[in-house]
Length: 191
Image (cartoon, rainbow, N blue to C red; front, top):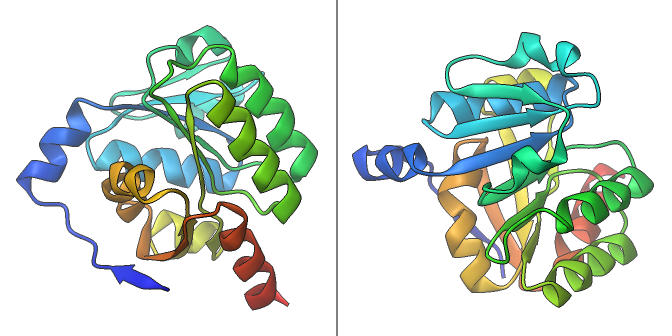
């Protein structure tokens, strides 16, 4: 069942954001736009890139650029916006070693259903959580918060992530409770 959520950034959402640290991995145009939107919403943001000087241009306000995985150790959420299944799996293995057990990996990348299931299983085994939240849109829409976010995960995990997802797109559509369902829908819509 699909349920669109309205975007709102009232005082309570901003107060919660100010207490939450979020990492963004993927400093291309989409990752930079995601980090900027999180920063504007009040989140303390870490932008991870192998060469932090390449991510420096995307940092503003309380966003920092780093190449040290350990800087993600106190992040409640990690958003990945990477090209391809292999890249997302490699990063998931790295972050799973440093994230606290309550952390949530939110993959906004275009990946296959099997990869989404593998990511969910990996994080679940470590006491972490996983959300597939692929997007429909481009860097221009990402910068203007015009993305359509398709989200799938266990309901409790989605509830934790909803205010975060809402500051990244114009609509968040909940697809289901199994991560791969969002990736399946994205592929159907894109083709």
